[in-house]
Amino acid sequence: MTVALSADEARRIILRAQGFLGADARRGGVPAVLRRLGAVQLDTISVLARSHELVAYARLGAVGRAKVERAYWDDPARAFEYWCHAACVLPIDDWPLYAFRRRYYAVRKYRWHEVPPTVEKVLHQVRESGPVTTADLGGAKNGGPWWDWSDAKIAIEWLLDTGQVVCTRRVGWRRVYDLTERAVPAHLLAEELSDTECVTRLTRTAGRALGVATRADLVDFLRLKAPEAALLDGALASGATGLVPVRVSGWPERAADAWADPAALEGEPRGRHRTTLLSPFDSLVWDRPRTSRVFGFDHRLEAYVPKDKRVHGYFTMPVLSGGRLIGRVDPAREGTTLVARQVGLEPRAGRGAVEAMAEALAEAAAWVGCDAVRVERADPAVTVALSAALAEAL
Image (cartoon, rainbow, N blue to C red; front, side):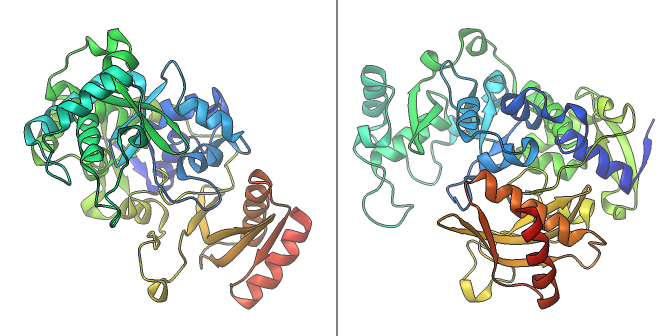
């Protein structure tokens, strides 16, 4: 039986599933956020903070950044790094579920680079001297562009891809690699799953994290290739994922048929909405077509767009308030001042949007140790109103 949902109902279910709505959202701290989301994307860009820190902050408020690091990279391991939607931190209990991807890389024997003949030597070094960083192995690059990796870097990353080594912690933002059998609990290593079992269980994880998701949303969450996407289709059709079919009125016809976690459909989502800045890599907004469909908000990361072609800024962060995306800000930091280099409010943001933007900026400033906020570029009327609101919020 297909459950009928309105677009607003679907949006609230999604917000609750993602930890932005409801009394339970803050329980369990950062480890619970990781379990709830199933995957937290990593990225090298650091503006106010790195993206994985911003994801926890957006849901928990001014959580200590050291707590975030301990929740992701600790000893014994609570999480590991691997490829999901992109490079992500994943709960350590999900190690068996990525066996299908490790097998794929082992057969392919290629990623971005040809695997060098020194790979066995690197594995031996990890076995004898690990845990190691690329610095211990002789460096990550040959001295050219970022993709000009050294043979040692290519080898260790291929060993990571195939599961022979694992990263469960970082030091100074450098991955620390160790033998998988030393870092991953034995009971997880002993769990051997088929490709079908892996994809089925990961689809359930993605469905629970997203709340309401189309088939395309689920495939994008896991970045499945065609053969694995076919396994997902079979698991959905058979009911093996535990997800149930829903139809969302108000979504485009081609995306109206979706899937939901049955637990997410139990009871109407209630509670206080978070008002916060969002990392563009946050799983609430990382899928641009989904963000447009759920929130009517068109957004893309412009960090890799030439400066003169950017519309909204380098690291534009959507602003969530009242369960809607009301605007965006491109932040920077100068000493103890948070600089809003560019601010924009959505045409349909409604009353209170300026105050909500001020609240989001003031809270973010306090979290990163700033005591002032400066607005550099916005509509003149917004600039005046926002500056007044910030004066009260700070």
